Image (cartoon, rainbow, N blue to C red; front, side):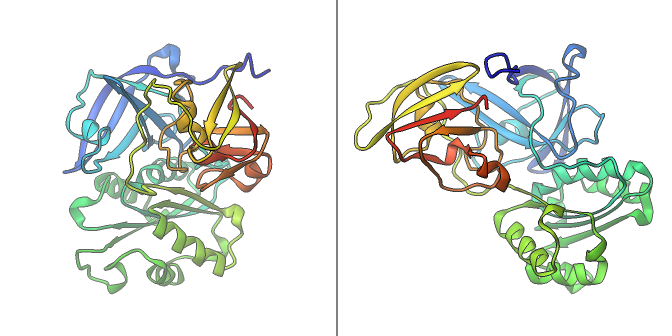
Length: 358
């Protein structure tokens, strides 16, 4: 299939089927997918949905991890970010029957789960969302085992507490569930405090046979994921067994898409953007990410978090030189092949070509 004929995922308005209050500041939103779109919205455990909200000139998107087991209706878990344009809307305003524009599932925080395996999850806060989908899916095979180390501030901030307890009741010894609370004392000292590298080491040493774990899943803030990766490296865990996803790399929301083209001042590059078979060449500044500056003309460019985390804006540089400031979404082999996150990519050479269809 050529780039010009490749069918790119499109937003569809999906009706909200159910809104479940998880905590004071978190909800789970379930979508009703019409039969004709069922194939488009079939997801792998660990994937995410990108939601879109347009309010006047503001066009904002956010990626939220799916928290349902494979085969169920798509459902996302959302925790409110104080003052958040999107999360506050979902937590406080959305009701069953409302329609929200949703992209089909995407994301690489998944693996081949067809073979029974031993899984360990190290998650914090809303990082439990994809872990719940993964754990509930793999436990169904009757053989896989799951250990979840779940960090939160207090008991009343734990998302999906009841569902996790139900899974524990259903699967017994095949599921170990360890809650770690940073601002509420627990019976054991090891589970009272932040889920940092030292505490995680103690938990792993006492509860996990690290040598025989097939998949390690890390999801949460940058500091926790970094500590966990460092520990696993120290333990000699092969990199291919470790899957990671970051939440809230920073607190700066994505800049809304606006259709106002600006005059470039200072050093610039001639950047050719290819998307859906259509080519546009623009003079773009070298000190602004390609995505941000090109969107002023090409408002159809895909994006979600703009933090280098979700991978929605992935494209391949087929000509020229660029600098990618940070990357939390692409695998090393993808970077080696020329793929970049355009929200983090600055043009360096006189001419650059960025192909979203590649």
